Length: 432
Image (cartoon, rainbow, N blue to C red; front, side, top):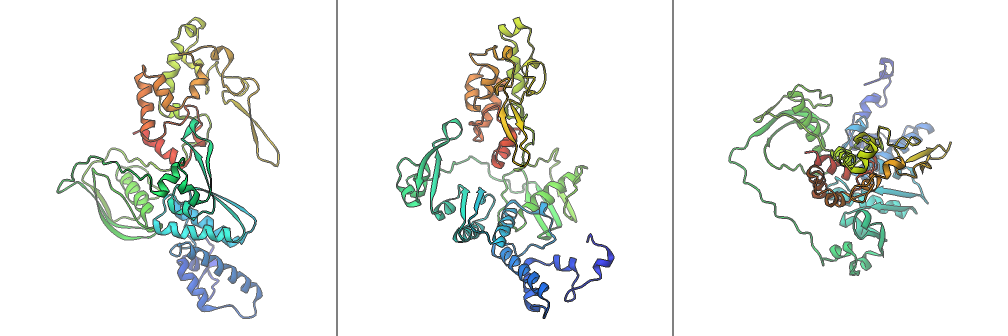
């Protein structure tokens, strides 16, 4: 319980502090309402009023099943978003700009409706709510829509529509409006599939307990595409991460610090590896990029080093690296920018005055491959690079997979720490 024995001696209405925190939010709210306010204790009255209000906000966003002592790292993405929104509701702010980046990600249809009510409540309090969103219901609930496009990457970045949803539906040039109005419909690709065998291999889970799961028994078919569905907080993430992933890791003799309590987990297939592909960032360093992550950067540097001009100059592949070697700019060490500390303000990043953001020395930039220098290659999108390096199968084949997962617009040199969660997740899939 993380408290000293002396602290556990104190009780309020018969319950210890850890006992109150272990109760589900909905049960705790009912418990506090039943007891009412302490008579004559003004400070306790104020504290209880604040507690009741915040518990009410948690119930309002559909989190009444959570206990207050639940570790935040165990919350699903949807739960975390709504907890953060609860803090905004509890602050009763006005004249505030709330910026939300795709808050509906991972939410069940029922929870999206709740999210819309919360966003509308914030706006009705006199705040500005600005949301990046793909969900049709959230777009329709907005007072004002701004559409950017017309395509991803270098072909985007322009405002293609501004106005109400009604006007958006009538706009013939708007791709979003075409789908909202029904002029265009989602085309579900018919993926060829083999029928499941009568007796497929099974992952047998027995007695799994963790968070919302209690002594769960489940037979999960293997060798096929399995979808876990349900409302936010129903235990999907716990089942996938703490039961399936960590349980299998433990069975393979690997460290699984967060594994759920299990009576047993047995698989009809001897797994060699367990891979978790989530939306966590790929790294915090700006030195990693799609070219490095897809293992094509080495081949590109080799191609530059094999050019006649590079051979005459005595350059090796290491000279075309921005992470090491003698070819990178000495002032910025191949970053292309310098950080200017602003004391009490956010740091400012300015292009390196020596290389002007190119990352390399002038003699390296003088080497051309098909008319492009090494910096210009890093500025190519994955789709452009596929055409440029079609004669190098290792490069074109690896980058073609980026196109298949919808990331053909990514520049080869874009730092991985600037990718969105969805982009990071799809880029991880490329490895497999």
